[in-house]
Image 1: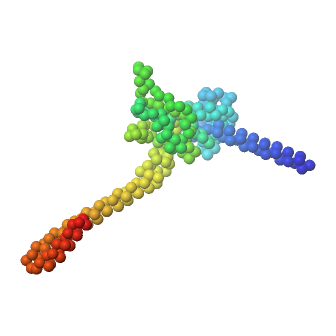
Image 2: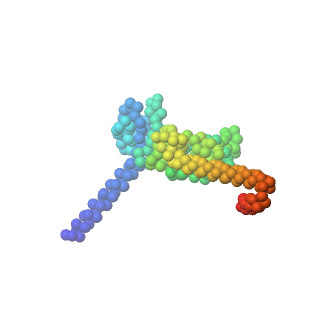
Image 3: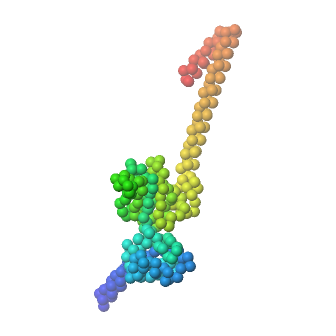
Length: 263
């Protein structure tokens, strides 16, 4: 009886795990489309034109957006990269659990390596999904035109990449589907880079360091100036002592010698 119960419990656990894995997979295959007074027929027809009606598992409207679940992850990625034309409206398509994008960079000098571009995007938390593709002039197929693109997955806490990035002093324009204005430093939609807490902290630290350096330089300058004034005063006293008494003259000369050696 006990062994039978153990087998049943094990079977239930496996079924629950399989259901959880299926749910996770379906969520990864789901995309979001912002609703602009569409109906289900409009959305389904537009997606069917792109990937085929048989690849759609669900199309549900909730909280001002359509959640569309597809059979294949490749179809979900394709819609995110290209967007969706519904009637006269070009709609942004975003992933539900993961956002896969085709990102283009413009004005990239030929000497900037693909690795440098990837490193910059990975600093934002992006996951690179493909090699870089370089574009060439139509009339001169061996000469690059400065445009490159790549497939990547955005970090879960970000909705967009910035409109531009800087690599080795080169300002590169960045573009992808569904792009919005975000902080160039942390990708937050709540502020821009000049107000980013992560950007301001090192700036404040550097400013404080600069202020300390200025203060130390000022103190040193005042100290040096004070010493020079004192030496002048001593020399004057020595001159006066020559007119009075020799012991006083020798006393100030000794003190002046010590200060000169010290400084």
